[in-house]
Length: 243
Image (tube, rainbow, N blue to C red; front, side, top):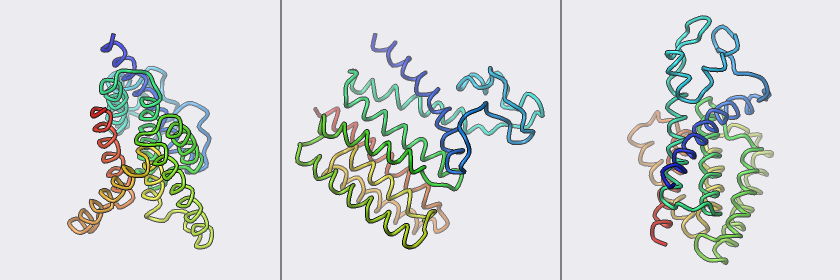
């Protein structure tokens, strides 16, 4: 049954990732997520079969069915990534509990952030706040480390969000390069708890500095999101396996 559940979660993850792409690309631009997806070149609606995660891209041969414009391969790749992360989370800890749901929420929010950052935007505020609330509740219900550690994490996140919001309003920095790092750090603290969260944030900050020195023109917004996501997920997997 474990294999069947993993396949099921892969399908769910791939399907949700397709939807996350819509949320991450439309919401930051103030567009509605309602309505069918359309080709960026000819603006015609994409056929239903082409919207099937991964298989739709293969059946459409990677092109629009109307204008034959090539469709970016990033869509099936991200759908595969999302599905794989959902399945892997279950295989590491094959139980449908708060811990698994916490990992799936974290993966979902970070994927939306990835799509937004690729479009030169930040994680939508509504998605960020929603992720913080869900992860905060789950951290209180089932702490990763200790109950006091969860309370510390919540306190740090509240302080971080308040300071950032005041600074953002004061300086009018809606698209500050460090915004994805601040958003991801807050999510990371609630995903891992205070102790492990701070370790992940410091490791990620060190990695970003190193990459920026080696590659001066690296996209800091994208690097921040990816580094914190990978490090946080890896630490959580180690914690789960160690328990």
